[in-house]
Image (tube, rainbow, N blue to C red; front, top):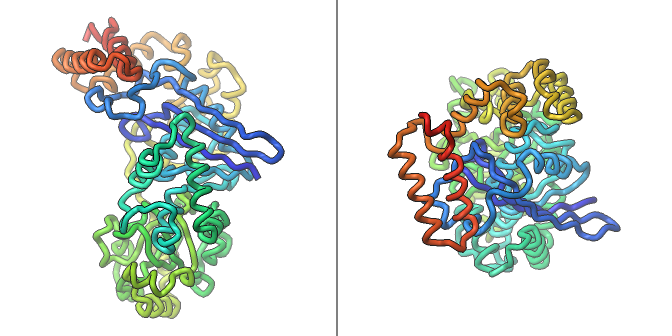
Length: 470
């Protein structure tokens, strides 16, 4: 089985607008020497970077205006992340840089699902495993992380930087950290490695064909991931429903909560029982996306001392499991009155990856696009049914082959780039402030490659004739 360790340096305000700027990778395959890559990705013009905040960014001393285009890198990334049977291991990836990678593939029309994983690929986030060991077997951790972990980013900074590891290929650091953790906590790490896909998690939880029709076969569990809506970012749960729009999203009953309303057949609206913040401990339902591959173990993994340290009342948990099993109408009500994930997405195509996967016909059209040169794309794109595909394809052409687009479309695109760089209010004062800040930083740190590249980039974009005419 191939194993792929990977890390990414990202930039930009959020994964929909931002991008991967560097990608570090180590691919281990049987009977093959390790394949190490460290790729620099040239920044898109329609990407805003604030010069005021850049001096403490990981890229402050790295090139910004050279390397592969984002489209070129996306072609490599889709081949890598589509490898059947490969285990992909990141560090803080599921809540950190994976969304940037996924949006890069989406923005560049890769043959890759917008939601879920490709070919039931296997994934593991080292930060999630460290959280689990910290919660269940803290005495086996090879590092002192203190009594409480706030975010995956805290773990990452502590272990990637405070340890003094070299940054030449960060994927090597991740490989070494996993080896260290396995050496001291082999049992939990091995357990995590055995459940690295959504289907493996669902099977272990007792789902039937990926769904829940009865709680008789469903197993209570310990679950851990940064996204979980509890103050510990972990807890003991029992799955009760699967989202009808996205089968990777599962609703779980918090076995430490009061389940009276959930089990009451006359309670008027079960959808009001879902938590939206970690403080809403009075609400019993927690939404979890299994595609993030949370750590999952049976309740037997929690020792008495673990329960005492975590503040888990085992008697309450056992009573709630029995109560749910006896409340046979809960699952039926959730099937008849399903709780649906209501994701509010902006209308702009860049933000609509989670709106769903493309139809089979549009997926075939995407494959045709990549079999042809960019100048052949306009005619092919005309046949797309999904407006996202048409709009994203048009934006790709404006980035990489503007000559095939009309002058009017090119002018609109340049205007879009300017609003990304400056903001929607294109005033001379705003432009002057940005230019001065970038120039000041470059003068103050003339040897910092990224700072100087950012200054040159801003001068290039804001000095265009199109902008000067505004």
